[in-house]
Image (cartoon, rainbow, N blue to C red; front, top):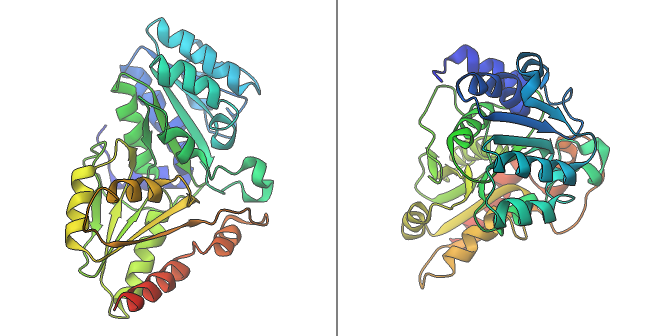
Length: 325
């Protein structure tokens, strides 16, 4: 799909899930006749009306039955369909984990699991609707590709790739409406490639999801204080860009990972696991959700409790840099 600035702005207003379900999937289904969309009673909140109206025969709402949805999706995939199965990340990654493991990871059915409202965007709904462990669950499953797009444009590109890719995929959609824009123009999305989006000499910062935008703002703050930070977007958690990471390990003395996810088992942990193979590598700081729960409130209120606001990220990096020095 050829992308222009108007489309990028529109998708940002729709948010990641709106961009995928209202904009991308109807266009994808027009070209790919095998596309099917399943949801666990989340059609209205996810902006699926356009797809449902255009392709009623390709749409199925299974009701609040996430585990059953994965089974249905796997069965359809076995008949040759390319199935997108979507609901809240908190439910699809936790409640349906057994079904994803058996039907998708083990049997490698061609199902694209889309977890929306990942992180703590549903902050006021409490921890039942938060997804701060989903990366850890999904990345340990064999044969499963895991995407964590930084903005709405990247979410669309991940969905487009998933529609053509033969095999199970987990797409982690974070944020709500008016998603921050990381990419102001079209770019080449390459699955598994760590993307450098800001040059820097002192510190390498790897972020994923909405934290990419927060990290870019933090890097600007640090630049004014004399600390130069390179910022990388890890939109693909699995397979991980080992070659790209190896270059970072060789170039920088301080590495920081930032994610809207538990610091245990997430993107930062994946980086640390690989880094442990090297005799010489930079010191790594993991910024994310502490191994605890926060009080409910707005998304940014929860972020502030966890130290994930731009200025908090900047302060943490500054402390660690000065400690290194």
